Length: 162
Length: 119
Image (cartoon, rainbow over all chains, first blue to last red):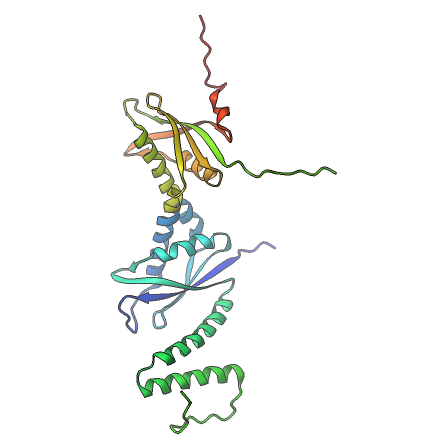
């Protein structure tokens, strides 16, 4: 069966000064990644990844990037990503999370990763309101996954043990 | 049934190359020669290309000819980078690869370039 096989690299953008949303366009990310591959792997790397590379998804709120590349050359992309230090004037770096064969597998990973991050956020919460918001979000995730709680009432009295 | 045991690829490959310019009056010393090789690897394969160790074992400054040694993993990369290198500081140049071998002794004699003195 002749088919182009791809790898999807899921990355998180970590900004120097963390702000809620930083306006970045997909073509800026594409250009910066191309430059990094050309610097690390030369004309060969740039030429070989140019055909199949594409920034498939970019979310500036969660700062998630999904880059597609041909399966034979995904290591060239993966090894060049750490050398990116800025996009435009904003200093940032790419934190690579997952490499998957399909977009769906990356989405599944993202769901699990989000749940793990909620647990980390819970520890970092400073005010009571933040804690309640994170706890509500965690319950919502597990409810969707396991459907254990049929009638969940979110009361202020519901106190979860620390 | 024959059983074939392979020793794998040789550790190093040796190349006899010479650098040719269109103009003849350009002098290249051994350091510049090594720098040109590194530049060829840099344009073709980027920074990971320059990471491979290429040794200049012998250099003949008059004919701009050298014997290079490279690890077997970087052999095809080096040869392809030298082949596709065309310009050095706005001057046209080319690398001519005369001989390639996995043992250095084989480069001692070249039947193509050998000239028999005719009396």
